Amino acid sequence: MIYLAGLFQSPDKVCDDPTCPFHGSIRVRGRILKGVVISDKMQRTVTVRVDYVKYDQKYKRYEKRFSKIKAHNPPCINAKVGDIVYIGETRPISKTVHFVVCQIERQKS
Image (cartoon, rainbow, N blue to C red):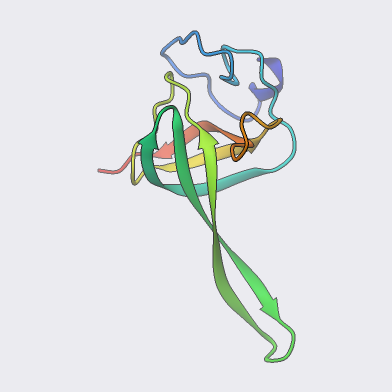
């Protein structure tokens, strides 16, 4: 798609998934997050751990926190456990999935 051309490289593999941001009809809009895949046991879905910091007003310090986000994993990208990935916000794909994997930054060695 044109709107992802400046942000991410299109994968070499071609898929026929309708919810793929490169070969399907789903649009990526909103937040783009970076995280680590911690589970890939679901079909075409991965769980991504996104780390962030929150400021504690009382102690005037930052604390580390994390979120676990479920994201659609298109067959042309096929992220595995341990991969560092970029996920983009989309329309709701299912009850709990509102993100899609856009690119693998680094694969687990």
